[in-house]
Image (cartoon, rainbow over all chains, first blue to last red; front, side, top):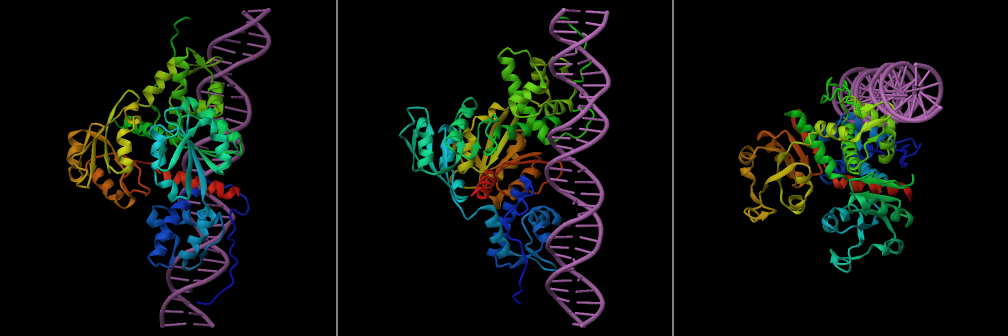
Length: 222
Length: 222
DNA sequence: CTTTCTTTGTGAAAAGTGTTACAAAGTTCG
DNA sequence: CGAACTTTGTAACACTTTTCACAAAGAAAG
């Protein structure tokens, strides 16, 4: 194979056109699959094959990748190692972030023992609660601190992501404190919609709503 | 207040036009808020006020409700008690369903103790695993059974919803068995996309993907 | 009762997202 | 090399969802 100069735009979101969140979500799926292919020593794959493995159309795959540059080769497809590297760069897979959890109840403690954070480059470095009986206890190597200490701890530990695992009534209060502590990225497990400044990203995870949607589907069935 | 005959079409999805899933999801949010308002003895609310509380536009609120009928009164808004009742009916809040979980690992056992199921009319009646050491154990009143018994148990217990809480590699196999046992509604926690017949509804809950999206957001920031 | 104000319900426009289709680029093979 | 084949990247189209905008309905006030 000849070494050829390529005009590949491996720039991360170049023309700052808006990229659908669904595209981002699929890129992670592509990355998983591509990594597995690269691992199996499969060197190239076409958008058609990739799409087939993931229940997506070939055009969808190409369009999604197209938002970020030109990674393919006409006639043969995508180089798995190259695409893997490109996706990792685009998706920030090479970086890690510190995470703090507020609320160490049922859900909060489950999160503290959930291995998925670490697997995705997220380090759970601090946990807070306002229940005096919980303060000082340790779960998975993290000592629970008083909620009042949160802003200071966020700064000291360079926390980038705040997780809200408190009841709905207290969620906004926690969000406000996160925002004033400089947090730009919140993962919200409380079933309520938060008001935050524009530059703060909130990701809602609402299992209740998922369950509710299911029962709506069934309600229609019978 | 005079009793007035109203020509309100309180029919559940009347003209069988297609309703966005996002609308359904928001209806649950409206219901929560409306229930809370009704509880506080607030008798009416306008689409504008409701939207403001939920970070949605007034038009969005009206359009969502408009899919199901006419619930408002020009000039004054929506009667909270009426709307609450209507939404509960539309969303099947008055019904309950039986649920079975396959996979009693880290996540599966957390689900078995999660109170949210019951709160939404979902009864966790059975749990399955293929690890012999787990079979026979009891969590939250549910005895873990062998995976092979699942189809029979699904029929005996009139299970409507199957929950997949196994690793990705085994998820499709479990889905297939659910489908052949007659399940029409699957809640999938495995980070993989399932192939099922058209008439089966799959709801994916993929915390990994949510976390990944967060780190993409942060990757762009710095 | 009439005027003024508020708010709904809903077509029409706009924005967002996915699909189709095809020229251009690259590969394969005789 | 040239013909036949494969696959990309993207522009145009189609579909979905949200926003806009306004007539009509009712409320409020005099």
